[in-house]
Image (cartoon, rainbow over all chains, first blue to last red; front, side, top):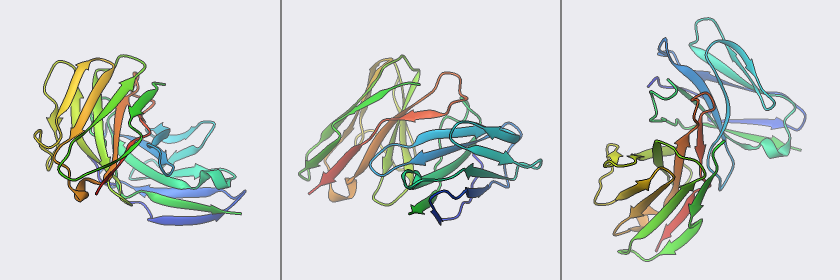
Length: 111
Length: 115
């Protein structure tokens, strides 16, 4: 599985947009990029998945440049409840079922 | 998406004893996964459990220490055997959503403290 690199932590304030960039220089042709969110005392929760360009859902947007060597998770107008650890994973859905979690990015949202 | 019920949610156990963690899914799934998350750390895959076959363990994890059962397509158990304080962690089970495009669903975890 492709190795990923993310910032260890990020601070933000309520109402701001938070952008977390993940580097995956060795991403393979068939790999997808998936982001998970984990609150304290809970299991990770799927946020968004994409292959190229831009994907948007009700929670976040995922921007993937043409070379796919990085991706950016964008959380619009964060609130205190968005304080969590965010993990970026790379692999092929169903084939690479061994999810490999990196250290993740701890996002702290302040009032 | 699948709903996972994991029991117990937490436990405090004496060293040398064993604890069995249950994972119940509200739909049939081919593979179930067991993870460990040590305090302040990321998740590490322990093993993959397929119904009707032996579980597949990752490097550093052995069946004698973490026996797994998978009696049907909606249920699995993970036992942490002969526990020591180093086994204090959160243990989570996970399943893959059917289409693959919605990632994996995780249980809320079992917080284990060994004293």
